Length: 203
Image (cartoon, rainbow, N blue to C red; front, side, top):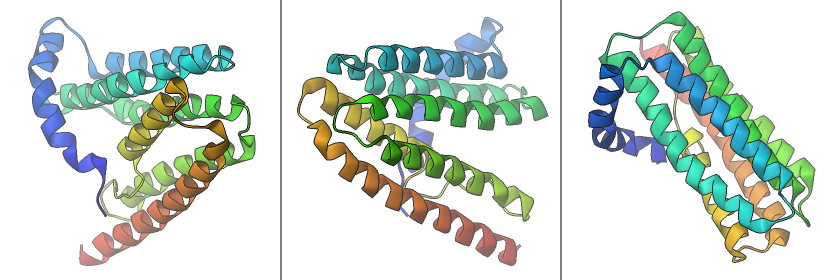
């Protein structure tokens, strides 16, 4: 299924000169990974603390874009400059789900939003990434299938944040939006499991 993840290679091409400069200055993939997670938690805490002021949700799309860049850069540092490690693999997966959860949860604090819907989306997002990682356990690759992978979620929540901040998106609509996201996440879990099993059978 179509996914924003399919644009990743083009995005990486744009970032490659910056990654080379970071490497020249001694930056490591794990440092970038941890920095992205720490900044995500800081942004999430700021948005949650000021959730009564809709404008603060403008930080979500701004940070989502920067975080996608940092996530691409840590992977490029690891692969292209010989920095791949077992610790890096753990950090990459764990910090992603921690940061994602933190950045989604402030939407539960908006008036008119049912927190349970947001929590359901967070739980399903965690299961989505778990289903992707489990591909390796059955002899397949790490699965990134859509329609609601990490990059797709970043785009969706960025748009939601911009909508809330601008006042163009009534918060009363967010329950419906979260319900749609939950369905798409459930479909993504099923799709990743099916594609992982299919890849394993072919192997």
